[in-house]
Length: 151
Picture 1 (cartoon, rainbow, N blue to C red):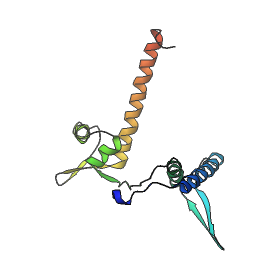
Picture 2: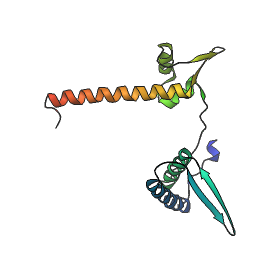
Picture 3: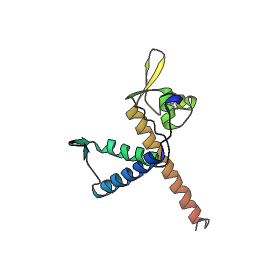
Picture 4: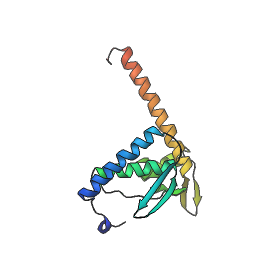
């Protein structure tokens, strides 16, 4: 998508997005798991569509952003990633990511002279890293409480 194609939602689009997001969030609260069946209609015709849970949640998130007046862009994430795509997903620099790869913290393979990563492996690393960070934070909080620094 080029910058020329980007446009901000108008007032009517913001209002419609806010209303739709609220209705869909209410539905999700009442039906917390599984696929959703949406009914779409216009003058004289109606279609029902079953939407997977992940797509339904994405639709709600996009509508919430539109309701805030933001433009929304969507990008597909391939099962196999380049080092730049992986670095972007982790919000780290590419050289830092390459260090993680070379240290064996995230599996990768080479295609010619390029490193490729599996999305599943990257997400597993992210899950482990988040759990480790939370564990350290819990330890620091416990130490602060023991020292009487945390009220």
